[in-house]
Length: 559
Image (cartoon, rainbow, N blue to C red; front, side, top):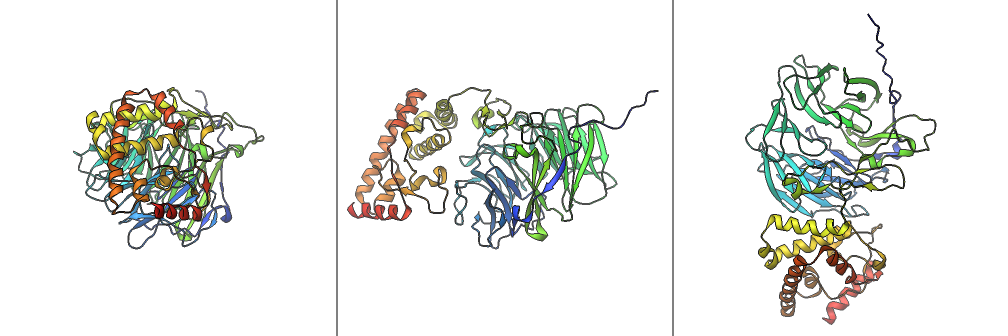
């Protein structure tokens, strides 16, 4: 009989948690006291969003990630919901776009300026209406651009596209409230937990239930996919009310692969998984500690590493994406702990100690999911599955796209295919609202995928496109001093009086011109059109905001 040591060699055995000081945290944040088991917090490399207490509606706070210290009690908020905000999530492919859901039965998508929220933001880019009762959860698709899932208390999981309307109801036959939505790495499967405490695996395109777990030995509350290991992990409670973690085979949920009881506390266990290091973090609601484990494909599948303890309990946690970590300090994970009793958001860094931490550690930071979408929402709805576009965290490197496309193809050809997917070609060519949608989409794609910028020196966006084109970094945004002839309906209405008959004639001619240009756009090659749009864009000189406003009033007087 051979003896086998229980010690397992791991390079993450000495990982430790480093909480920030109070000066490096976010103090004075009125964290929401909601009883929902959501995190109420979301982070990206630019901003931190926290759901806050608000009288007469719902709101959340958006802070620049480096805006640490004491937060002004009168700091502007995003407050466009008429009911309490229940969940917020940043778009994984746009650091200035965030989605929120509320008790007012709506999902709203917001554009956050580069300089942050300088005044109360009440107008959303899009309001998505697809539920009849309060919306509890939202989740972005991990690889498809502009695709969002929402779950509400009307027993529906609805798939939404950011243009403003639902495209599919994923589950309508299961009359049970859904507690968790979690995609696998390529977005082809969806794991959910419901009020009956079962784990279900769904096909998110059709809503067909592929697997259902048994609730006899494990009552699940949270679930997530273990990327790269082909497993599911759920947290919940045992029949004896002990908090429990369970590993499953996603193709067979009849019997668990692994079960372990943790303690007898009553708080919900939030699981977080890092696919790059195969580390699992468990943080309980109301707990002051965070346990972390290492997962593998060999039995017993899970190995306990250590835990980080704190005297202050956490209400929820936000997580920084890997591209926002400090690789020079060997930071492999970062939490944002919501400490409601102190009105404090505390960053907590998980660090691997290394002697030469200044050098880039390739074994700690392999290629990871980047902020570039692998496909459009329409491609995914048609059945395409793609893995995330990977990027290196090494300073000076760029995103590696395994699906080669030029910016013109991504910015124009895909947008044309999206419109052809949604509506008939003749309808697109003659209707005004669809022309406006095309103009907004082209403007957004030009801003997100710029080409040669040599001819754009000195160009600044006009005020009609500030939500999508803001490049200001100070509270007083600069506006163009000299404006070219109006090219959009919004510009004509700004420069003319409401009762001016000449304004109406200009609008009629403008719509006819848009129709002719769109017909030529449909028949023209993408590369030629992209070049033509950039060469025809006029140069504009910047001037301060006060001078711009006086210039606008002078133009109106002359008109």
